[in-house]
Length: 398
Ligand code: ADP
Ligand code: MG
Image (cartoon, rainbow, N blue to C red; front, top):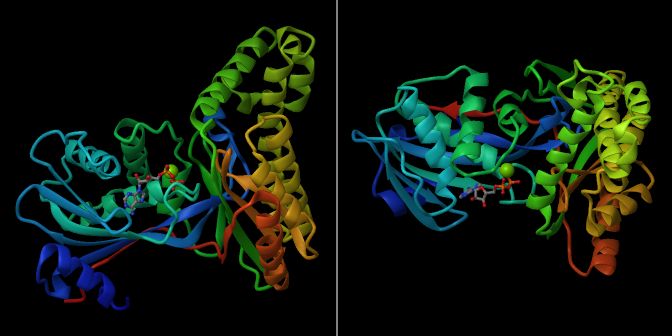
């Protein structure tokens, strides 16, 4: 794709599902997935996260319609979804269309869109792999629908509309990180995002000697959802207990290591599990800030060490890892030239992310390809990525 032209593959796919079309009548949007380098399970505690956008995208090719119908074909699901913008958008089948329906409803209710689209969605992000195919789908679709209606939305509001869609229509209680980075990422930079007030700082991450490798365990354990709700409850419980000593606090974000130690003498000290959960969050917030500072100095050793510490804390104190993720991190640690690695995303499966000297990339890939199947019984998928740019719209060139 170049000069606003849609690739011939997408064009022929589009025509197969929606009939003949001139390329100049199509618009195309792209939104990246993401990988979180550090700051895990901190978002719902008003804390810090540090994601990058990856070089994997949802792509939407769309033709504006005169009426209010949306017809959306997913190449991944090989299925067509149809709904109308005439009234409040229905929460109908198929399940995957809820992400687009929610986005459409957010934009419709805001009075931004009246015209529907014929659209095709393609993705090279694994669906459900922890790299945020969902947020990238929402953002790409939102941009397509807005562009088809000659509208735009400020970036933060766009991210918020997409998050609303995921919470209210898809029923996933996610934070803002995924949509935020997909919209606002800049090439060659990681984003330190403060989930309390959405302030952020772009930290340079572009070094020809450095590689970021994403390794997909290809497992997804079912406990994830129930355990996620339980962790949130435990964090709230920790805050409630700590308020005996620190009545002003409203989240673990405001808690320091020293405050936690003091809180141990009270109610919090009697519940060792809740104490460990809180310990992870407090430590992880500090590690995320330390990582951003180390990144600024290009101190890769410190960055890597913080990633290992993060993994250990998620494994032992927050208890959201799983054997497959632990094995992948162990394999990474055994490869010379790897600075650090950790599970990334909610846990219980999904991916790890590793920071390596670039020349160590092939060694790491080879080690994973040999060791992981031997120890876990199946293959892992992996790829290298740079810190990619955020979502974009390409209009027909005329
Ligand atoms: P992740 O965001 O980590 O990939 P989620 O479970 O949050 O995992 O989101 C995955 C879901 O998003 C899919 O099961 C599907 O419903 C929806 N989705 C994402 N991309 C597409 C796509 N290209 N076509 C259809 N549905 C998609
Ligand atoms: Mg998701």
